[in-house]
Image (cartoon, rainbow, N blue to C red; front, side):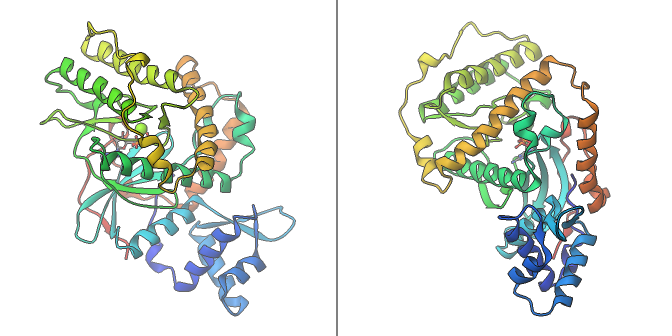
Length: 380
Ligand code: ADP
Ligand code: MG
């Protein structure tokens, strides 16, 4: 789903109030009844509310839900994007939007600029996307969710990612500086490096390999396992050859029930990549789970940051399902989808079409990554 900010400057104060009202109403209603929207918005006069509803629906920020027992609307991902961006604009964290530079499995990555013109990264979490194109098992858990609950999961992912990045950065780990978070979005420092998978000139593979293994152990010594430590989530600067780690929604504590498995998987990902790409196999078999010695408690510290244990569990449950799917996709032919899954794809596309396409957001290159461009559009 593309981020299309063209309509943002045309929204009136009333439109924003109505959009916020739909969001608030969504907390208790899958379909928010029109009278409730009107009531929450606090606007006098039905005509103003109706005008705003129609404006918002026209640009795809809310969607009319047909065949419901009553007339109502739901917030779309586009609407949630606008609310998050508006928060960033008000906080002066964002001033303009540039190009899309990455499409993750469950996120969209844009270069944006703050008021001083400095380029930063906007990561928009889009959980639920993967469930539209995957296999039959797990589907009950994944399917029986409505768009509001996906949005809630995306918020949790953004909150968790921001909380972990902050603790990691404060403790000297090589991660982007987290800048702000609102709803399902995270703002962070733009790292002028490419994912390891794309970097062609690694001067000293054994050294980088050793650095990365040391990093896995350093995370673990502070109580943390990245959980998706691979060539896509490690950015390597071509000049300095320094790695920076990104992508934290699946991070777990070393006290997690599956901690050893996740730790071993992180280690194995790096081994496999270095064997394949550089034909490099280390003489050192490790590191192993037995090498992990706890010296710090960042896993505990992060709990105090506003991302609660309960929220962590909710997100964890979802992410575990997704990880299982990932592994299966590796084994199976991923073209193997049934007819009803194709239908879901259409559902998802509908949202995208409602928003229209932004031609400026399409300059992706191989591996979903392109060079940041300077031609941002102002959104205010
Ligand atoms: P996902 O969770 O969808 O995998 P990631 O956080 O891994 O999302 O980001 C996807 C891609 O976007 C990365 O592989 C990288 O190319 C780019 N990217 C993400 N964050 C940054 C950043 N801070 N600086 C530069 N590029 C980034
Ligand atoms: Mg990633």
